[in-house]
Length: 413
Image (tube, rainbow, N blue to C red):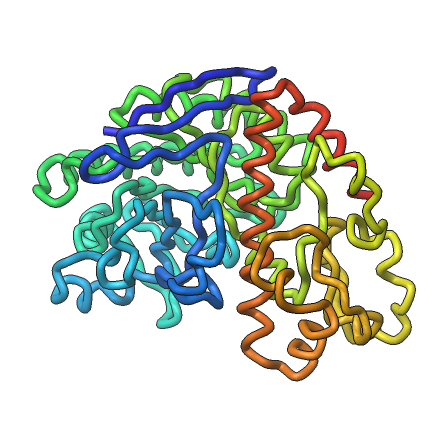
């Protein structure tokens, strides 16, 4: 059974390590940290061979039930689980209900079922169906079945209360069914904290879930919501204060570097890595610095590499580019100004793309719609993101967490 050991706490930010992972208990996962995001159990754009070119790949791989549920019959016939089927046998597997990138449409959950959407349409999950699916997948960590619908305009207090009641009922039923299953009784259950925007319901969910035999907690329903960032942070602070200190806290859908720093400061331990995937899908490359103690001789970086302050200089040439979701932490390689820019995506980045190719080459691949563009950008963006979390842990160890946080914030206008 996994064990979380906290070595240092800064404000509510927790530095530590999760040990006793894997069949033999030989694997570890440092926190704060992230998980390796996959779609249909494969890292987007990458093969397992190309993934080996990235350093610091997390020890836990994130599966999404919504992309795998329709393959239950195949996996049941295979009998060895999704890890071996997808070539992920050397990593731990965490299975969430939904894909943080594509949340389910609201309005379909009931007191008896939770709906998920895959390529084949909607699938209704009862606790029994959910447990049979997990028996086929054989993931190591399992997010409990929960009513975590994300409402674009928030939800009423009555709906928030219902989400908590349903989720607790689902959790109790799934725990009972898993205890009775030879395949699942040794698996780790991650309890979901629901309750919408209402602190009272969030706290009730946290307290009641903590009473159950779960090994970690997912702060669910914070992604893609039409609610202020400050409100989210206040809710996160209130919830983590109610949770036991010896179990990890997960969150989905908040992955921008400044969001990550804010959540870590409020006691969140583990994040998904959907943000670098979303950046890749925009044709962008992560270009922020997370070196809180830079080498004095190389500290003066090209301003264009660290912020998007000059990104819009050729905007009239690139009017077809959708800039609504591009953040300050990335550069858009689709822009025509990169046609003759022969620098790497980011100076001193150790990734394969930056060592072998230029911005101009990636721009060419994007405009030519070559599949290699996604491979190179995904390699770079994963490398930068995993390195960012390494910098966070080093900063916390050195007592420089606030210095790094301020550096990250300065790069966002």
